[in-house]
Image (cartoon, rainbow, N blue to C red; front, side, top):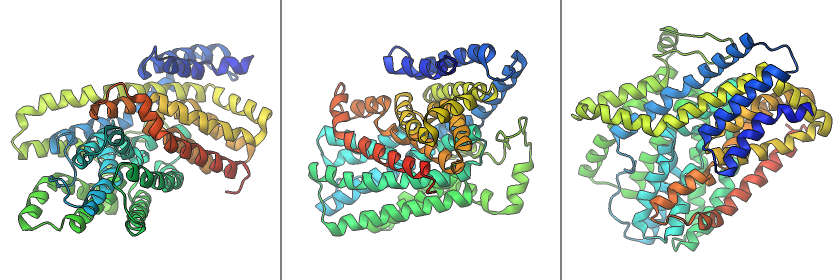
Length: 487
């Protein structure tokens, strides 16, 4: 009976979102309220109101750390490049089949993920669909290609999800992102093959030579972003790796003349300067140490510190303001700030709420108690179930933060209790929480609206079902590998 009581916060969140009666924020607030009551009344260890206050403050701090990424990324994108603009300056419809295919691949697997990494919130969908629309494909295929912009959501929103997940797991965000990236690579290998089939159905087929080239581009891009993550951290890795790749791809495909090259350089200068500066702040040790030490705040042991001059979100805001001033758009700052807040506020509040709930469950010993109960009932094979549940919750909540908030602490405790590889369990949990975001109800609504097919979500789910099945297959296979202690 006590185990049922301990699961009430998670059950309340799942039921609220799945019923359609509550949005993600309302469901998270409901779960937080129930978690408070359960922690104070039925915690397995002594847990007083003062302990709850510390847990809530710690959770709020963890959530705050990613707020500048979210709002700064949105503000920078809005000012440097209006939402929906392509990150590659190709405006005319491609003249031949090969050019059409190359634009489609770049839009789905390069430009869309790049836009999503800078901002999150489906901006990658908008950029991808603006490009793919030129190919005159059927609406159902247009929305499917738009969703493929979400295939590298591990690095979405300046890696904010990895930072939150690592904080909840009490580990390093770079280590978590690197380990989780191998699961995401498996996803992308299967998704690429499904993309080939989808492109054939849309009338943009290609031979095996072109497919081999696409696999090579995707493989090299993934290798670069994983290497950049290990070197720079998850916040700037995607921008640093995919920015140059997109430029190289455009040069190879478009072979621009000098005027076109100059126009492109001017348009993309804010991105190049920002990326270059962020890379320097991570690679020059004296500069890194100075920026990390200046104004550093670290109120909670084991939680991320905040160094305002080292935080990438700070430089996103600075880049937005400098770009606006350089382009004479200073009068638009108030409207752009309001627009960024309007777009990002629900995500900000939800992240903070889920982080507070996670800290309550962890600090009160409930997460550890649930993990011990699962281990007693199912032994180490309990690890097979939670990733699938996390994937579903992540899709329903349109974010991996909810699933991580509910299950990350329990997964860490379960891995410790069962003698499993803790780093592998954490990475699997995080990758699972993000894995079905490309078929989340919110993103389905976005693509149907942008494709001019509102109400066709059922058709969208039908065409994307193979991509979801691929996720389930990878998660099950990885869970078995972890449970058998093969890693």
